[in-house]
Image: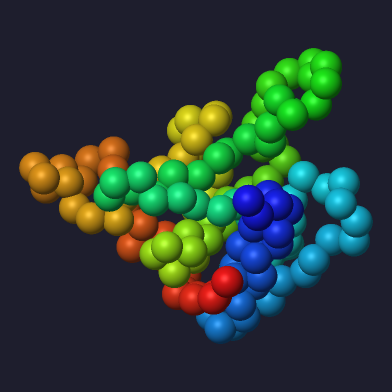
Length: 143
């Protein structure tokens, strides 16, 4: 089984490649203790971006929108959300090769987020977050 840190590092790299290809300048914070992984220049201002790995579940890409502390021996809380600490989530889904940039306000759930890869069967659009609306690039990394 691959170490979660390696998976996260690969996702961050894919996100950086997509940002660079789009001509979006970014900065990488020094150290491991920031709540965001990148600072990206969007519209003349820097925004804080948390990178996550998406996983396909049927016709959606799911991703975590909180940090997990359940692996610690005596966690005070199982998870910690990012409200007020990041402005965007950047998601890389290796199976779809997609990189998505999502404002935190577009992710209503505090535990998981999802992006739809295919249209709904009833063609509903209201309240549905389509991956294509947030896609900033395609990156294929062979493992």
